Length: 341
Image 1 (spheres, one colour):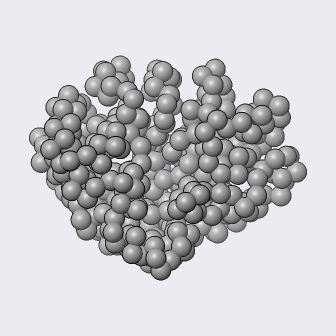
Image 2 (cartoon, helix red, strand yellow):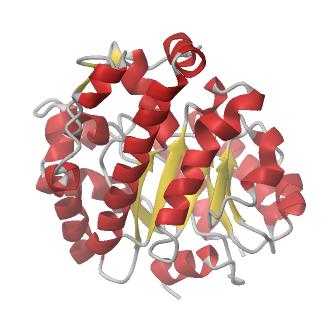
């Protein structure tokens, strides 16, 4: 069984000898070859050039025996295609060139031809499918409607989401209109990724902790369900949600093939609670990959032993890999997983 077959079998919750492994946001600033390329090209240039994006996607696979490649892209390509461009700066992070503040701003979004505008993403994936062949799985991804709306309304990253919540409580019809547009675009976008050759897609709900518990269903989860229902039977879907472990019962029923969970949860207990309804992915603390190899190896083995025999388990971090991650730590982590079982 090659890496791609292992990954696909796991998505179907079939018994496998070991869990497959990939690393969220695996191509990034922790790799020296990426930093060298970044000296020549901006982040957006690399994302929007299929040849460069293909090269960056393959960088981790040239170093580590990962079972899947994740397309080098960004969740903010969708706002950009809608007419809300983004910029990325190593020091200041992500910023949007304008903010969505009113119903009139939403009317000005460029909703026609969004998928065509994003053809560079699909071209990258077609190139990757050719390069990977049948040996490795290929993953696509996108942000959830709520998470994309957070960037568009806040004008960049946020901790407390004050502006977004002001809209959600004070002008709910405005936010609903934005979330409706994003949901429709996401379904088309992820469907096209499936046509381009990805084996699965992941929805990132990084802004979910911005929802007060009583509003999580209405502000975020119902839109995630809409996307999942729109893609049903077309491509396996992994739903990554941060800080919402207390909603496990309802998460099990949203229709995702796999739930990807953060490191604050005890994954063996989660798997027991879910009782095979859905696969689980995670949930190593990203800081683990900043530690010496002996700590990485011991901590990785502990969770692998606890998850042994759980069908549908994918080894991964509980969030994206950090820029401070050490190459030998990543190597130890991946080798420990791939040599298990």
